[in-house]
Image (cartoon, rainbow, N blue to C red):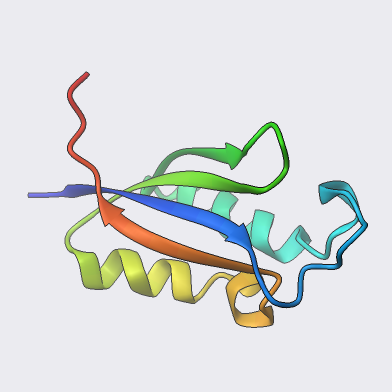
Length: 92
């Protein structure tokens, strides 16, 4: 049975201060998320309106898989973003 996880992204140590979200090196991050969405593991996601981070919802087998998918994100690897993963008990 699949479990739903929320990955909460925030600015990492290599975020370029003073530059808006559109000017951050995040194209590989977006490609990674789109690939996860295409294969059905990412249900939804996007940045917060205030550009301080973002949220993605993953549906995968277990916490280890969710954490690995986030750790493999190029923006996490580069330090542009950091993230925490939590089990999300969806009600509706």
